[in-house]
Amino acid sequence: MGDDSLIGGAGNDSLQGGTGNDILDGGAGNDSLQDGAGNDIYLFGRGAGQDTIIDYDTTAGNLDKVQIASGVLPADVKVTRDQSHLYLNINNPDGTADKLTLQYWFYSSNYKVEQVVFTDDPTTVWAVAELNALANAATEHADYIEGSAGDDNINGLGGNDTIVGGAGSDTLAGGAGDDLLLPSGEGWSEGIQKGANRGRSQYIYLAACLPTWRLDTAYPRRRKRSKSTGADYDRTGTVLDSSYAAKKIRLPSQNYGY
Image 1: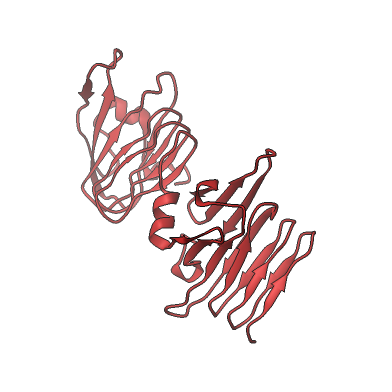
Image 2: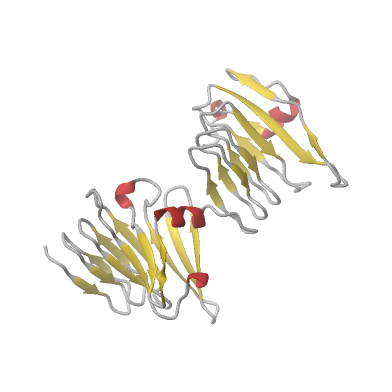
């Protein structure tokens, strides 16, 4: 109970705050930082190691923050994600890297840390909307990207990407690389653009929540001067009406783990 300040040492620490507005600093080492109710601050920076935050707070209007230490600017922090977790990555000049995992950040709003702020740039505040946008931005590397509730147009660019359409009628383009496309929205149409990854595998996994859907595919011609649009692939039940679709599309009944 109360407002606590918890500071770890050079090893791998486990710090757990209670009710109140706490400050948690794991220090060096790979630390576990856990807190609950209250407006809490988690400190992170160069040399912090591979830290993990679990912040579970059901209080409406609470404001938890990650405070990035001096010596790190917004341009030094790369925001990434997977299905459930948010990651803040800092690459150091000596070739090492520090990583902060915000566990279950995408799983539930109860696990949200609401802001990332910078000691050396107090005018920059990454709130939930900015963190979502940064985490879902496509790069030339392997990305996990998830669409919004609306109609999205997502291009994964390079790298072996996982792209989830989400709700809405979405257009998903894997780009180069071996990409996993998951058109799992509730809309009628999911457009798939086959990337310029000739000789590689690119599969489309369909979610069980789509009782009826249509896929429109587009792919570049060999000379890359123009695009050709393939036939629509309609499915009701478990039947695919195209040999191309049968090779590249995985139905929910095929149980590929998605």
